Length: 363
Image (tube, rainbow, N blue to C red):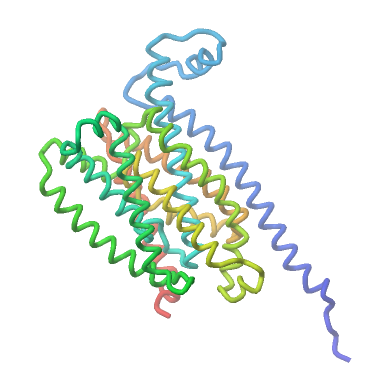
């Protein structure tokens, strides 16, 4: 009689492998968490102003000891909102990229595929160039929040249009959404270019710097406006983990496992739209974070989204904070837009991913 392995024996290697991946992911999460704390402290002490007593300013805010008014103003009014903004935006972009790659089942997927970045950019450009033509009452009511609000609305509007185009008979086609996103992005870019062509010299400088991404203009007011949306999407993302893992096996298998695939697609797309729209609204466009971070983590710890999403958030925050520190240093005392730094670092990595997955893409 041929030997037939028991069900328990067949399950042991899989269970052992899953346990190894979980331990590796948890160890990596601890290392990334400690690294994030270190990078955050370095970010508070990094800048053109020297001799800043960061520990003293932090302790003084907690009611322990005293610090100079200069140190308190620089740390708490300038560098702290900048650091928090960079961390939140990096986490949101990385998590959004992880969700999109799981949804499209493609390591080259990016939040920009759903058109939210192009739509948000259009909204911001329109507000910068055409905001002066709005009624005085609207300008007074919105104030500095006009550009972030317009960017957020633009991102949401473009995503909803894509969703309507890709949905037929209660079913959303991911392939149709991808192609429609490319077309809508091109159309939005053309309209944005026409508006930019009509901009003044002062507006062009703002548009150039804003379009490449920067956290230099971060304030507590902007954080209060966009931060809750980003935090809410970060908290809700792990609830999509089980559905994304099931979707990796194909939609029929996911449905057989009890996943409402259509509802999951809708939640994932709207979550990414809200998250990236809020990010673009306060920092402009920052590329490659959503592609590089999830793929790098998959190489290290595997594709399980329950373990992948939290680590992606932490590593994304680290990447953007490090890019911000580089942007303050390369051409000091001036600053480079973060988008330039992430493009220089992420571009070669993206080409490597493309070459590595060429065989899959040519199928």
